[in-house]
Image (cartoon, rainbow, N blue to C red):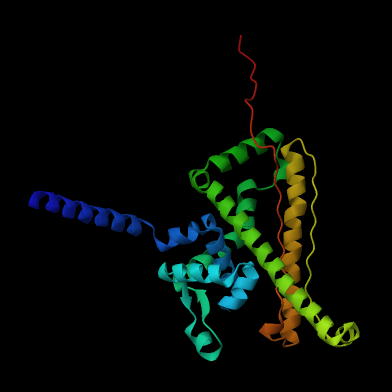
Length: 281
């Protein structure tokens, strides 16, 4: 009997050791990189990236989830050290406010920096596509895809980025929904004429364009990408221009509205075929 109890104790001890090892294996960076696998946790982190600090009521409205469900996730994320209580904001406001933990905020900022540098990396990788023939372009792209670092991370990076874009879109829709309901409430309480003459809206908009272009070779693809990336450069120039204008006019930070712009291009036809070679006689 004593021997059996000892074996059970040893087994429990081993189970605890294995459990501890599993927990240690997942670093904070890995937790951040795997967030996209949990839809609710990821959109909460995205919201805190965008708004810096939020209370339960506001957060639940933005992600369009019940407060009861949202608070359960917040409690779990506090334990996992993905987020922390914003003590300063909580002390000066009503209710608890939450923000990203220092480590998660650091990884978030590093990811944004990497994304900002992606255009330069593309230029360095592909050089001047217009001066290359179809065979050379094909080879450069295959070499880029088969690069060990890209091969290991490209698929996961793409999934994370798509999930992040979807989160931003959901937050924009959530923000628009909140503002629209408030505006309609004012119309109901004060009347349409009062709202038209006395409400000044923030300069923000939601616009959507969806289209497709048929192509058959890499030359055409890169011509399309020239327009694609050219647009991003124009947006960057406007960003700098608008900042200078607002700085000159001393526009405070709280009146500087973020208008998010997202570009996406892709195909439903990925693959490859073996190049036919003439047999030597």
